[in-house]
Amino acid sequence: MTALQSARLVKLVNRVYHNVEYYRKKMQQVGLEPGDIKGIEDITKLPFTTKNDLRDNYPFGLFAVPKTEIVRVHASSGTTGKATVVGYTRRDIEVWQECVARTISMADLGKDDIIQIAYGYGLFTGGLGAHYGAENLGATVVPMSTGNTKKLVTMMVDFGVTGIMCTPSYLLHIAEVIDEMGQMDNIKLKAAICGAEPWTEKMRLQIEEKLHIRAHDIYGLSEVMGPGVACDCKYHKGLHIAEDHFLPEIVDADTLEPVADGVTGELVFSTLTKEGIPLIRYRTKDLTSITHETCECGRTTARLSRFKGRSDDMLIIRGVNVFPSQIEAALLELGETTPHYLMIVDRVNNLDSLEVQVEVEERFFSDEIKELEKLTKKIATAIQHAIGLAVKVKLVAPKTIERSMGKSVHVIDNRKFD
Ligand code: DLL
Image 1 (tube, rainbow, N blue to C red):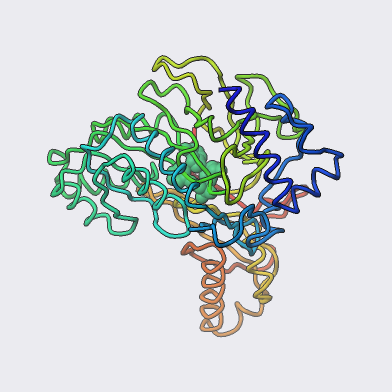
Image 2 (image 1 turned 45 degrees about the vertical axis):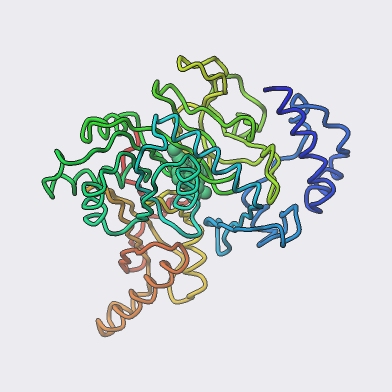
């Protein structure tokens, strides 16, 4: 594996140096030539890449191939207005579907299975990523997407669905709907592959018990590929990384120095085979630890522990990545409120909800109620437009939101992740 990773890293560095001005400049700034990277032992010489670098090069500045070779783009939330855009060549799509197919077989599902994909389809990588992987394996794919849970359950029963891929919180909601519809004894579900948001081992066991299935944890991020970067096997002792395609490092989130196996730090990936938008030392901001011990299942690939949070303030609400700064940018652009806001995230019946409280000038409260309603609607639309999620907006009087002496607090997350 090390030899393969080293050979691929050398090729990657050469490719980005010659094809992407951003990387060439960044390497030149630290006096690096492609020939200085001889193997994975040299990885720490290379500079890091962040979401902001993708944003600064929006939309296609980090692509390493001519646009004619890009067959698909996906996008995820940027920290403010602009999305983070990723492009895939035909070969990238092939690698992606193979990685996802591996995760599905780790969950012991295969070509005889009927798999419902209940991640969102569209710019988000969940739906199409899972879809292509399941199809690649030869399974029968039911592209449900999200939204109509009763219809999903009806089809689950009628089609004899045996596998499902969706966010863990949505699966718990689906389980409730199955119960409400009195269909628990009629489902044929064997396994679920859940990810795209943080969840706990307790929640995984809850899903297994409620639905009498195996539940697996799948990880990925759009910048690096999408779902399928890592997944846990039947022993559930960490997520096996597709290490032949993604070179992992764990670094201290403050010093950015590598940490030892077993120590929690920030996960960093270099994409060893990606053609469209290769990334060097991409800081995922996800906190986890790594082990290189061989798993009980026999796989020798490095494993990540369950994710412990993030080193930035990104929230995942109903599977959608949200940065508080996006809300701030939307409010500033609107220009009709104060900059003081508070996001309150809750989880009721396993569905996330977001309320945004915004301070507005006193006069709105003395004016006609209609004005207040109009502004509430306007803000809700602006925020929904910015983050892609419906929110409840509550306008509050000046100085209602508690001021902080230090870093201002913009989020109260009432969901439990431990
Ligand atoms: O969420 C890709 C994906 C789709 C993964 C379907 C798994 C299943 P993004 O929208 O770019 O991509 O969000 C990536 O989601 O950096 C993590 O913070 C979080 N995340 C993804 N999977 C897990 C997981 C997709 N299994 C961000 N556990 C990542 C915890 C996860 N967090």
